[in-house]
Amino acid sequence: MTTDLAALARDIDARCRLHGEFVLRSGKVSDEYFDKYLFEGDPELLRRVAAAMVDLLPADTQVLGGLELGGVPIATMLSSLTGLPAVFVRKEAKSYGTRRLAEGGDVDGKVVTLIEDIITTGGAVRDAAMALREQGAHVSTVVCAIDRSAPGDSVLPAVQVSTVSVLTKADLDAAAG
Image (cartoon, rainbow, N blue to C red; front, side, top):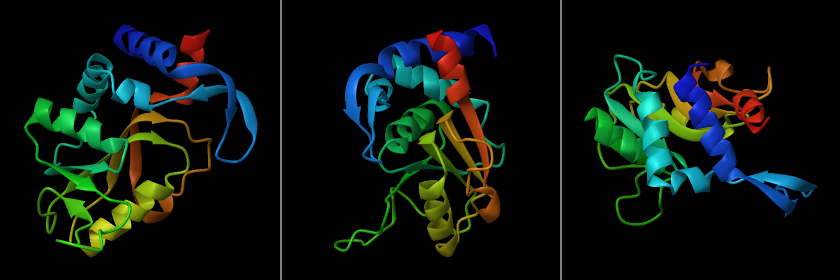
C-alpha cells in the first residue's frame, strides 16, 4: 500500500470507526460500528476517495453508475474529477414520473462502470448490474471505496462483474492499529 493510501485508510478509519453500543442489521450487538456516511459527508475525505478511484476506472468507461445511496456522492465527485457523465442507479425503478432505474442519462449501448462505497457480498451491485444490462448497458466492473468481503463471499464473479477497490477491511484494520 502506498503512503497516500495508508494515510487515507488511517483518516477514514479515524473518522468512521465508532465505539459504543450498536445494534447491527443482524440484530447482534457490537461495541464498534463503521459509519461510512461520515467519510461520504466530509468533502475532503470524499474528494480523496474519488481521486484514488480515478486510476482504477477501466479505460473504456463511458458512464459512471453511482449506486443508491452511498455510491451517488462518490460518483458525483468522480464525475467532476474525470469529466465522465454519471447516472444514479436506484435499488428499483421508481413507480411514478419517468419510472427510471438509472437517473441522469441514457445507458443503452454504453460501458457503465458501477461506483459503490462499500461491498460486503455484492448483492446490491449484482442486482444493479443485471438491471442495467436489461437496459442495454455493458457492465463488467465495480469500483468501490472499501471492499470488506471475505474470500469467497462475493456473488459478483457469478455475474461476470469484477471488483476493484481503493481499500479493504484489512487496510482499515491495519490503520486502526
